[in-house]
Length: 162
Image 1 (cartoon, rainbow, N blue to C red):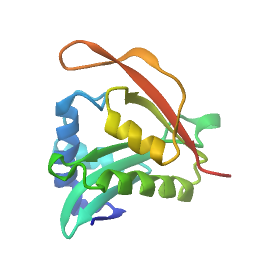
Image 2: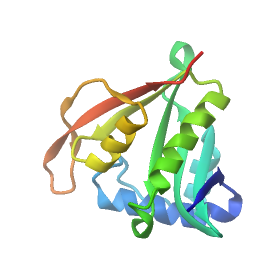
Image 3: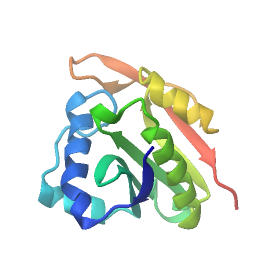
Image 4: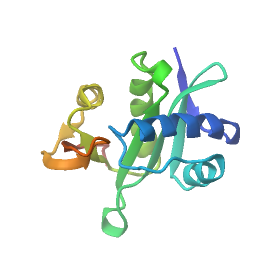
């Protein structure tokens, strides 16, 4: 199976393609605008850390890690994950989430918080819960789907230790 490593400049084109798949699907990310290689390179470079799941030279998925807030809440991390459609269901997501927790600790974060996990994203929710994330509640109608209807969102957190 795949391994996870820090992204490299040569990974950006594949990362942009995978990220844009999730944006275009419109059922998990809040973003509506796709990246191109220039905006993608800048976007990934500004993160605290980006990891990629790779199998050989092929990028299967990625995550971005950054502070969820600033100042007195800057010790809380946030992350987003994207797995290539052709690689879903094969364990890359689990590797990415586990690595992001380790990297968050390495970068001095104390908590990981997800602000907007779409309630209908059962696979992601099951994965997060299996890795020890706790749901904070439900925000009714917090996510606008591509067809104009609204789905609930479920914030999650995971403590990372002192």
